Image (cartoon, rainbow over all chains, first blue to last red; front, side):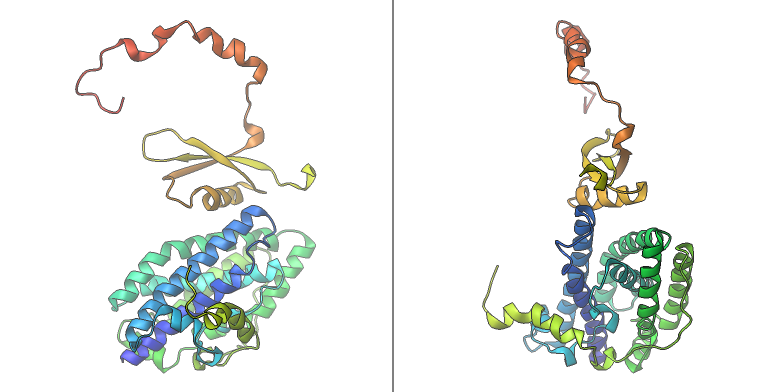
Length: 250
Length: 95
C-alpha cells in the first residue's frame, strides 16, 4: 500500500520535474521577451510542484532519500515520467501543443487530487491547482492564435498535434497502482479524467480550426520505466552538476 | 526596427481594494488577452496586487513637455487647494 503510494507520487513528481526541465531549456530562446519570461515562469511552476512531490516521495521511501537524491541520482530506467514530458521542444508549435495536451490533463488530474484522501497529496494539489489553471489559459490562447493563424502556423500546429496525439493515450492507461489508489480514494478515476480531458481539448482544437486526430495508437512504457532515447540526454544535462560535484552548494 | 515589434500595452495594477490602479510598466502583445497574460507574468510575479488593467499605448493621449507651464504652473500660488488648512476630525482614518 505504502509502496504503491510511493510509486504513484514518484510518477507525478517525475512528470513535473522532467517537463519543467524540458521547458526551462527554452529560457533565453523565447520568440519574444514576454513569452520567454512566461515560459520560464511556467517551467518554475512545474519544478516547484515536482520538488514538493519528490519531497513527499523521499519521505515515504526513507533511508536518507531526499528530493535531490531522487531527482539527481536516479537513471532513466528508474524515472516514471510520462513519455510526452521528455520529448524535445521542437518548434514553438510542438512545444505549445505538447504543453497544452499535458496542461489540460494535469488540470483534471489535480482537480481530482484536491479531493484525495491522502492529506499531503491533497495539500500539494491544492497549492498547484491555481498555477495549472493559468498554464491551461496560457497554452490554450496560443493554440487558438497559432491554429487559427497563418497557413504556415496552422500547418505546423496540425503536424505537431498529429505527432503528439500518440503520446496522450498513456495519460489514461491505468495499471494496478492506479487502480489500487483509486479504490483507496487517493487518486482520481483516470477514465473520468479522460472524458473531461477529451471534451476540453476537442473544444479548443476545434476552435483553433484544427482537426482532432482519430488515431488511437499510443506510445506507453513510462509506468515501467521504459523511455524514449531522449530522456537519457535530458538527465545527463540535468544531473551532470550534482553528480560531478556532490557537495556543490548555491 | 519598429515594424518588427508587436504593439505596446500599458499595464496598471491595483494593489489593494479601493485604491486607484497605478502604472506598473508596459508589455508587447498582439492582442488584449496576450497583453493581460504578459502583464501577469512580468508585473504580477511578486504579489503586487488584486487587479490588473492593460490599455493599448496608442489609446493614451498625453500632454507634451511644452504643456507643462500652462498645465501645472498656475497651481503654484494656490496653496488653498490643498486640504492642509482643514482640521481632520479624530475619527477619520486613511486620509
